[in-house]
Image 1 (cartoon, rainbow, N blue to C red):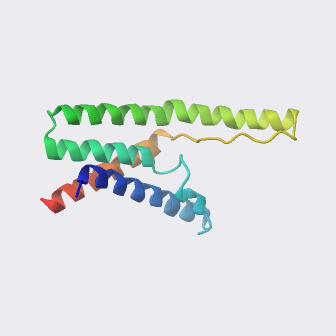
Image 2 (cartoon, one colour; image 1 turned 135 degrees about the vertical axis):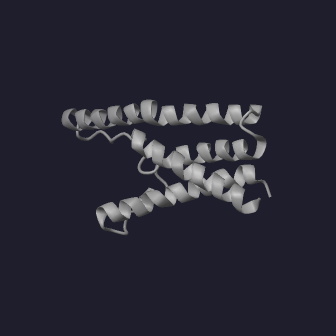
Image 3 (cartoon, rainbow, N blue to C red; image 1 turned 45 degrees about the vertical axis):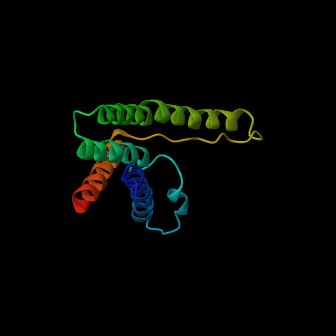
Length: 140
């Protein structure tokens, strides 16, 4: 059983499921099934996935291992990208759609890949760290 694959997959499933639960509570409706597969929102499944991998590697291989350094740098890049790049491109997409609708209403709207707020990224990272720690300490 390769826990280096299972831990991030489990973290992704928990975070993506958390998006559904969060949206259902926030909207007071269980009909928010799109939250099970969309990007963006609370918590960040990207952050949960990469942080769970980095934390699990750190616990298993040691914090001074090259593998942990690689996973940690990868996690930082993904989380930075989620907040800075994907979030701003999503906001630009929303504005382009509004402008396009005002100028030429018959044009199809752009698909928008929403990024994350810093809080969504931090919560996702906490979910990932928790999943990795629980799996590691449960199986030791």
